[in-house]
Image (tube, rainbow, N blue to C red; front, side, top):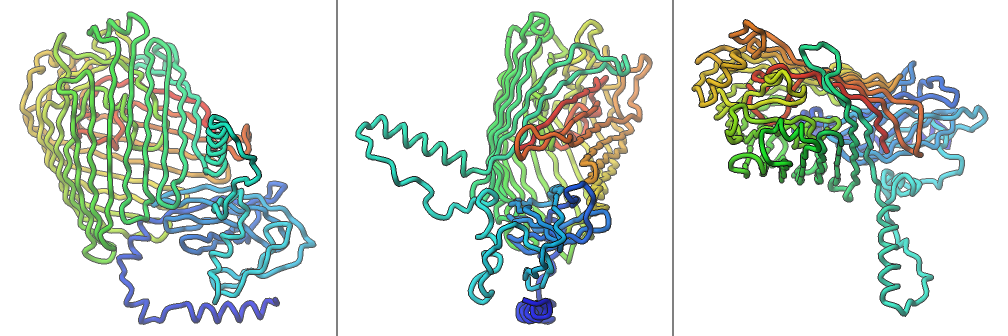
Length: 618
């Protein structure tokens, strides 16, 4: 088909498929705003077989929706997509590209794909009709594809999905089982054969993905600068998951370490697709910590030789209709070393559109925070899950461990002002937080103790009221950042451990009333040319407890976490991806954990955690 004919057919199809101006004007704007804030992005660089960047390459996505982007003069492309399943292709005149990949896009997800195409100057041009537009491109495979039937009889998108190689998209069409097995008279033989067949089919037809981490971690005392305070520990971490049809994904995570403190953790969870009406997530985790030598047992101040934590959780975001969302969930934890043992942590929230791009939000939650929460429970943010590597004991000898009970209420307004692929949000909120038996975490109390050992006590209960302003979003195709500033007032009621805490760390006992200023920021950058990712988190507050010899009052201080991931040019397994990972942090608690505002402020002499290793993705 010649180019003019293809163009005429494309224009005719577009005129039939395109809605009228009246139809567009009547479409609810809230849906557009929601797609803008929930969409994901596929980005990367296209090179030829010699490593040179190739401009003008058409990268197309066919699936939940249809979209296309062309590479610029640097070979880079960025393709915004609403959440769902897609098939990616890359085509350009004069090139052959066998690249066809099935991908799943989540809300606000960013996928990186570096594509290689091969130059063939003698290849004839062949226009391809896609999404009612004539795109001049060459065949993406050496063999000739069958011509698609007319759009009036069959969906063009369905035709492309149907003619993908089965190694890229396993659509499961037809019965793939063999029919030439002879009759097996033995029931045992039949059971073994059918079991082997089912197992083989499961592993062959399931799109497994995940990663394996081989890490080394060590702690550095804040008083010794950057000198290691002990022997490094090895950590093995593995994540395996697979899709469940088009509904969601299951995932299993596990990690273990050995040494003076043997520990392991495991998590199994299921997560529904973000684009569904009920985007829920449910799972079960278990962690255990066991001292392997008498020195570690002595630090615990207890006869128990092990500690374990089990947790069951379920979270759901229910879209009642465009512009109205409910967010609710429940977590049940069991700590075998804490008084009371069983703890419930519910939460419920809402987000309602009141104008195009403007939402009213509300949240009510209650959380039980026990000593060791960060050691045993999976981190809410992305990154390796390190098994329990610290030991802890009660500051008052013989006192039982108590959990911190936190109740929090929020109400605010958010405005989305970004575009598809670059969502940005500005929000203002009021919050009120009440923490009973607020925990203080004290490192370095015993000069002879290990760097990774800390003591816990409660200086009392606190109520906090304040206002916060938050700006977050993708500010360029490569940078995502957030800044959260808050000002608040606190009122304290002293507890039973005040005297013991005053003797070892006076600044951890607060005045009855105080004002706090807090700035928490995150920065995430992606450099596709070198396949480098950088993540930085920093918290600055006017009321950190500190351990200066003459320090009786809180002071301005900061905490940070830096993580660098660099892709390596090796591929130990076909289709795998190897990254070098290094991180440095003196944050004691993940900022996204549902804890108290004061948890980090009342952590004193936090040692720096340095971690490095290799991650193999498959």
